[in-house]
Length: 117
Image 1: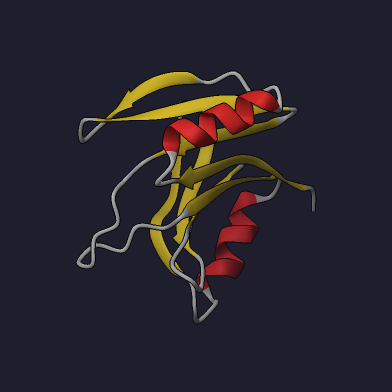
Image 2: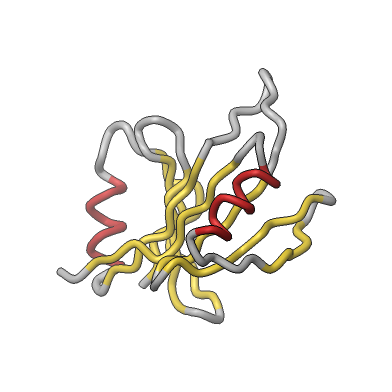
């Protein structure tokens, strides 16, 4: 099975500093408005998309520090296998989107993992 990490999304309390730091490494960010009135900053580090967002921590809502998007070539098999894992929660069943099939799960630590195929 062929897999690869294609997006790393980081929730940071130091948004401007992180943008500046990653600019030093050659990442040019583009600001993209998202629902809820916030802005996500996306750029490429080689073949890896880096997305930065700043969502304040809230004791009532668990906000992960980062999320991953992983490309797989046999998504149906992968999602079926993951759905049997006792410590993983399926947030969105396999769904057809314009850029392919996608499912979203929470890993055992509660972080969002998008699986795309």
